[in-house]
Length: 114
Image (cartoon, rainbow, N blue to C red; front, side, top):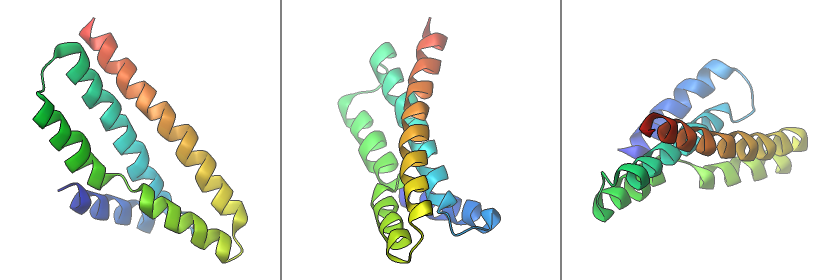
């Protein structure tokens, strides 16, 4: 399910971005980081999810949804084809925005939980 969602969402975003920058992969990575931050905060604060459910959602669904292997491939290909500017931009954006999204997801759920 996660891989199918990744394929559909990343393709949709990339088609609209009209750039060689891997915007579709970035969008999926950020969404996945946001989702895992929120999911694991819910599991932590509410004890709402058992270990098996948590593993299924975090590893099974979100693990196949986020695309850091694709991120690595696309970044290397950008550098290999002479687009090191976009390769470094992809690294910086994926790390900075992805980490911020994990923090935001976690913080939002903790704030809602009280």
